[in-house]
Image 1 (spheres, one colour):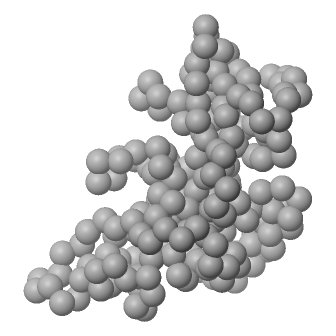
Image 2 (cartoon, rainbow, N blue to C red):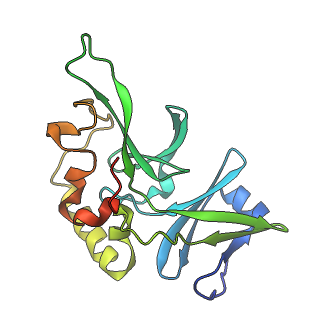
Length: 198
């Protein structure tokens, strides 16, 4: 499908509703940003197309309901991202509980999401106007291409399993005692949460 160049700032036409429903997932570049448009259970979602963790292409990720939220699962490292909020979620236990009970916890918003609207059978995406740095921003644009290539090249050095390991954590803290998202700050600096505590 040929997409005409859209003016920046406004909603971008991304396709006809019937075509996007048939595709289920569609890749579009809007204002230099790579977006994945997903149609699932009669709802359209638009998210950054590369996983916040290591730049994996989300287009082939499975969609599952986890803890009452629809999530896309990165095919590379099995990171779970909510479709509606872009929230990174993980399962962990509190070692102080006896017996420990695994629970789903949030890392906060990690994946940039975008608004989708439908008008007379046409579907439009309006890019997020959130000025805060969100971790999936790292893999966008020309610098993002370089970062994705580096991540892909280094992937062979670390074994990856199909199972997400369960972690033991203290409430409000990540694995190793870090607050959620602290471990992911290595490339992006403290602005990733834009002052929001999760």
